[in-house]
Amino acid sequence: MDAVATAAVGDLSGLEPGQARAVGSLARALLAQAAAFCSHPQEPSAWAVTDPLVLQSLGQGSAALAVPIADLLVPRYPGLTERLNLDGAAILDVGTGVAALALAFAHRFPHATVAGIDVWEPALELARTNVSRAGLRGRVKVCQQDVSTLTDTDAFDLVWFAGPFIPTVILDDSLCRVAR
Image: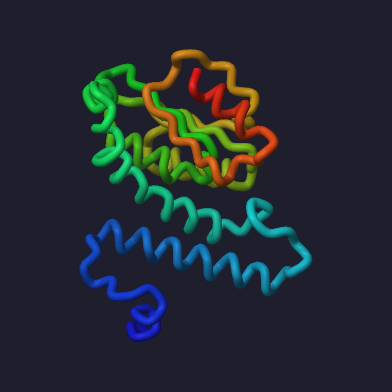
């Protein structure tokens, strides 16, 4: 099996444990999604997926983004690292899914609150469970909301916006709403 994995994605021996978990989660998600498609080819693809294994695996893969965001992107903005480490800091996770990235942000920035919004109720159901299991209901809130209806102004210090997953017809308006 190691030979197959190495042939498919290359040598993974140099990865840190968190990186290896992220690669494993993504591989499980893609395999589970392919298996679900094979079992039910009549169902639409993409975010019509309701299989908890696929949703959780994709979420765990996305949680790995918290480290490069915190360590590489946030420091590029003067004062943002300090702001995110103060009480009252707020982060928005657009397209939160199962809230894996929102939870990773909450761990990475322990003084911040995190709001996660998504339109996909099957993922949000898992998100609520994940937040509760993590013991972070006081700091991480998830709700069903379309980003195109976001009305907050000056509410967040950091926003994760998964642009490739936002429908093109609402993308420009949604980016303007997030920028406010």
